[in-house]
Structure formats: structure tokens, C-alpha cells
Image 1 (cartoon, rainbow, N blue to C red):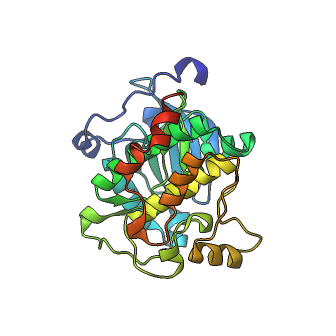
Image 2: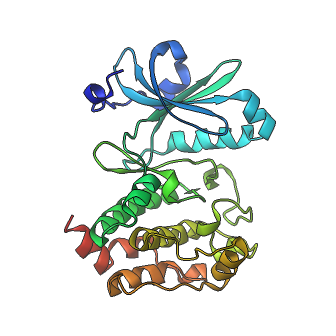
Length: 290
């Protein structure tokens, strides 16, 4: 497959949820290209939809692995949540199908891969770039929360970058949809240690404000290169998170420090609201210069 000639044709595979429900997909609908990666449950492939020549990513999951690890319900929830979310900074799930051996997700293709790999290569980002990225992510998270979805695992590994440099929030495996009757106060410990909020570490109930905390950790890592509670051991990291102890280097501007300090509040009720973050002077001044 000639990726460079067709990458711009990442058009919609599905027009409506009704069409996806009715249409019967199979691997025969696609030209399968090179592998993009492999994970615990299966493989990711570059593919082209034959009839529309649209470039997509096919996530092929093996049922035997899903059953072995008991994540069938989690996958079903992930599909339902990601399918209903339609935002330019959220990775689109166009459709899905299964056969006797596999479950296949038809995903938007983000050609530049994980933001994590880019951050590791560049070590840290400028304040202008960080503000631009934060604006995109805040827009995505605000929309997600308006749909009553909590992501619960926002981190660089779960953010992809498309050919235009736009961020795409991905991996909704730990997400919860409150619109489906789930309690708005949760207690399940999930996500990645460096990004867990104090209320989760302390086994307290939590709500969508855990995503706001994660954005604070993310901004710190953008500007510094490491998470704010990074430590030699998990025990120390957990203690630092529990007490909300962190230091922001002098290389970070006072305005950016103000944003981080207002996001990383131990008390969830004191964390800056997303609407407030969007109009913070640092966000406005820095993102306008990109």
C-alpha cells in the first residue's frame, strides 16, 4: 500500500451510527497493509477501504486472548463509548465487526503515532506547543464530559497525532459512560500510576475531575520532560501523589506554573474548571503564537 499517496484520504467510513449497525463488515472490505504495532490482545494494521479508498487502522483482537484475560465486557464498553464520541481531537471509531476468532475495530488512522514517542524523542515541548496541545485536549475532554464520559487514563501513550499534527485522544478501555446508568462517583482504581490522582490513591470516590488532574500532570510532563511525581519507586510516587508534593523547575514560566498549580489540587473541588483553563492568560497568549 502506498501510504504517502493516500494518507490524505482519511475520509469517514461511516456516516451514521444507524448505517454502522446495519452494514455487515468483513476483512474482505479492506486491502490490508503493513502492521502498525502489536499489543497484548492482537495487532494493528494499516488498511484501505476498497470502495472508498479511505485509509484506516484496523485493530484486530483475538477472542481467545480477550476471553483468557476476562476483558470482553471492558472491550464492549470501550466500543460503545468510542463509537458515540465524535470530536476532531478524539480518535474516531468508524465501525467494528467480528468473526469466530477475531474482533476488528475500524479506527481513524493517525499517521504520526503516539505523542509519547514524540515527547521522548524531543524530551520536552516549548510553552507555545504545549499550550496548543492543551487547547486541543481541553476541547476534547470538555466535549467528552458533556457526553457524560470519564476517560480515566489520559497520558501521552493514549494520545495520537495525525498527519496534520492534530492530537487524537484514544484508548477508551478504562473509560466509563455515566449516561448508561453508571454512578457519577467511582472507586475503581485504574489508569497509570504517574497520572493517578490523590483521591484514587487514597481509595476515595471520584468523578470527572480525575481527568482534569491528568491534564495537569500532562502539562507538567510537556514542559519538564517527566511527570511531576516521578520517583525511584512506586511507594514514593504514591506518597508524593497522596500529599500532592511536587516542584516546578524555574525553566517553566510563572504563568504556566499557575496553570499547573491550579490543576494539580489535592482537593478535586479546588481544581480549575476546563472553561477557566481555556481562557487562562497563559493558554490565550501562548497558543495564539503557534
